[in-house]
Length: 442
Image (cartoon, one colour):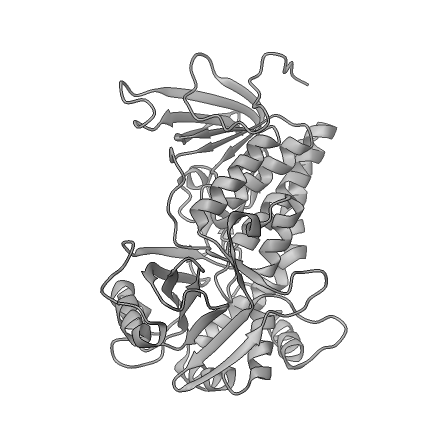
């Protein structure tokens, strides 16, 4: 072991926001990225008594429009971290309203095991900042405005990272530092530059999502149902393999966005920003909003899905959250997956640090596969099938046939299938699971 006597430690309630000076900081685990995945793993490890340093390249919490809906699975993960979004002013969501054409059906959140029977809505900048504070309160060092620019590699092992400090924190001159660590966690998001430096790549033939979103003022912002518009039309009037959504935030605003699967036949002809504008006009009267009055410039990005980025580990590093492509292939939810990844990664790293055996990290990909491997495989199959118009059109009509069918759709989309009382969703999923085994690399 190492002598930690002179190592900087954070005090309860303190988030270290400043710049490193002098020699390299020495830590057990360096976490690159301060989103839900990074904050989760940092909190769990710090609680276990390990020295953890988390670096986030932005000097302040960024206003991020994705992940405002906190699903029951995400709420369960947050509860294990002693985080209650209700205490952050979150707006409770009772379920999902599915809309297609002139039909609409509703589905309350499924009751599944010990999961909450509701979701919450809270803007991601608030949630992310609170999670980083929770990591600092647990004993982690949290450095905002510090970007990991390159890994430190010695004899094939990652031993930390070189850092640069944001000019807002150090305007006088460029400042550089290093953090040396026994292990590194890659948690810097969907376009993980640090992960690419370590050799991670996306499976090019696996599906991904293209999403864009923004905010509007709305007189219906206090509603308790997320609205999901299935098969919204492209410029030619054809339904897309994707959906538009409206998430009421309870604060006078709504999160409005569109998402398209890469398997959609004409995906290359989709202009996501124009699609969002068209969708906003489509729902303007219904949601009592002005489609020309966006409260934030739309954000557009690709979302890797279904575990499509790998490898998930190396001899001394793990990859978590969006950096590992962990978002759901059914609904694009990345927050619950990020928190789950962080918890599993921390469990593995705790064992490795306690036992002093780095090969323990090899358990991590297996643990992920046990948790969501089959679900991801079925999701990839579903994405490929829905990209075909001959399958998409009848599937859209089926999805809004009744409230009961909508409930089945939501159970699959949220991975909250019934164990003891299987219904149509469970039977459909079992069939798809069997079929997917014949094409595991889809």
